[in-house]
Length: 610
Image (cartoon, rainbow, N blue to C red):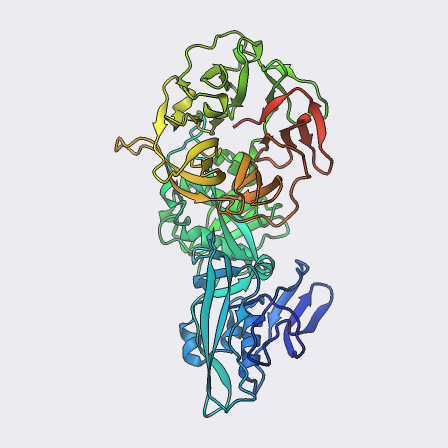
């Protein structure tokens, strides 16, 4: 149970802070406890430098209950790996039973202490109950998975005075920890761990598609070892039904392993409890790929991974280049072109990294102007394109090659207006094409496997509302949907469950909110393996553009520069590719470190492949 903190009138030294170049500095405690029965907030501290290490101080001899509470809350926001110092504020029995890793509750501000925890001025007592309360923002569960939350938080902590030693200790508290949002952002970081889509081979080589599974880890407490342990424990419950791991059941780090870090050649050795007979060569390459993709989140310079067996023998070694060939990874496949519609409603393209403004029609019927298009989507290999024409009534799929014709549309809509017909289509790396019909009388989500001529309606059991926009992840295991209901448009992420031979077909399950504070989402685009770029409005607010994670967390960092009246956006999993938008100025782009630039004043509907 930890809190965001601010200074108070009475303090004592509460923790030490270590700087890489400054040794150890003892700081005054940052939390203050009430001196009377009035309600007091334990408020947020300012954000601190990411290089700062925070260490807890043990309880002082003879400390009163207020000081015990203060020290305990401070200790829980420190970088103490096993919460050993925090346990010193607990009775022996409570210290044995307390499970801090069970959950983390994030509050909008630090928890309010609603009971006077200082017995001074009252009849002496040996038992006190303190109540912590606040407004919930999110929870992180035992699997380190983040989930947005709301509602009130209220938990009791009980303190007693040992009759023999005379020392106050906490002897009753709930499992888990609680802290304000500011402390959570300082203590935790979001990291993607990687698994493989269960039924989503990519390309002619049949590569498995890597799927990101974001979790939160304590950022200064041996994060690489934390992430390997989390990876070996398997995917989070939400993602588990649609992915697999190549690690055999029961795989773990060898006993006593900690402090994993690359050597001076950017090579990491991971000691496992496996015997060589348990590991096939092909599976070992996939295992190392999972480790390398996961840890590059923390150490981008990591170049190779060696997996060791129980006896110290090398199981396999994998370089970055080999990992890219072992699995399909969206962030490692930069697009060649940016696509959009010109003033004649033809599909045109330009080099993705171009600094110019010239574009040319795409080869094939979508670029020849035979039909006025409302939107376009291009397959991940940039060999095939799909366009919505006839004022949103018809979906056409054609090769990106000279010649050819439109053919019969595999999906049509009878919606009464263009805004109530087909959405912009979207491709995954398998080559499957997704589109939604917004017809208020017959709404539906459809998939064309391998971009073929036959469409299949996709069941969405948890859907409450009408799908207004669709963006499938490159991995083919997750999909982002903008859903309209009761005058609001909200962003949801779902799992794509594919037919496993039961004849039940394809469905989208497990819908969860990815931007709960935005009530009018107007445009979305995947912008990373687990990140989306979203345009929307909060209640009573103005249009904003920001990044969100698929688990509903908001990334800590700057949002893209402000832009007026954004109607569509295009981003790539490769962060080096400029953002592109359709606004009141037409097509505009945002190169890294620059301002928005005009590309085509008459252009609309920009997309990168996908």
